[in-house]
Image (cartoon, rainbow, N blue to C red):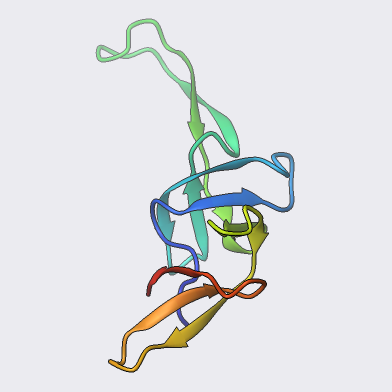
Length: 107
């Protein structure tokens, strides 16, 4: 099954604590079906004192979020939309908006 969400896409969170938030995808893990989105699903990582980090403390990082909780933002509709696939005459596949049919980039 093709991956509908890719790195550098603008996505909207549709479920969870960060519902409604829009941001850019930093990383996608195809095997686990999760993505790291900028500023979404922030968690604290507690650091023990070390030579590298003499103070210790808490580091806030972005944790992966399930792809099922994300929707790609259509450039034409300016909404989170479901995506489909259109095969061009030359055989290339493109992601398209299910609502308006706008092209969302090559697969």
